[in-house]
Image (cartoon, rainbow, N blue to C red; front, side):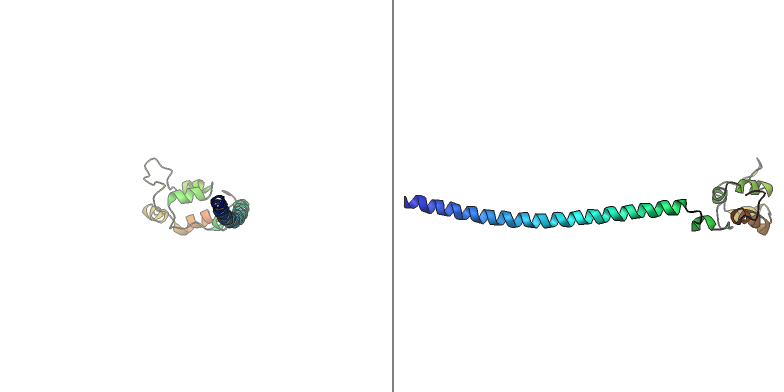
Length: 139
């Protein structure tokens, strides 16, 4: 009988130790879970805010990239992509519209106007007039 009592006491003691370690592990996991939940909420809020800012900047007519002017450092493709009426200006200055013209979208705009002896200031003024509204014929 004594052996049974000693054995039951040992089993009870081990059960209590196991219960204690399990309880502390659960508390630690609960704390980590709360931290992870807070981080997920913070991340979700950050993503939502970023999406709102991107939508706002994409729909804003005063977007800084839209106000940049045409320059001779651009490629011909960049010039054409910048404004829908840019092609009309290039055609008016006889740049890129001829079947014998070797100008491609990758061609540097400054090099192209030099090669074809086009008035640099004239074409830039006409193109930039599309942006600032001073060229109503093509805007």
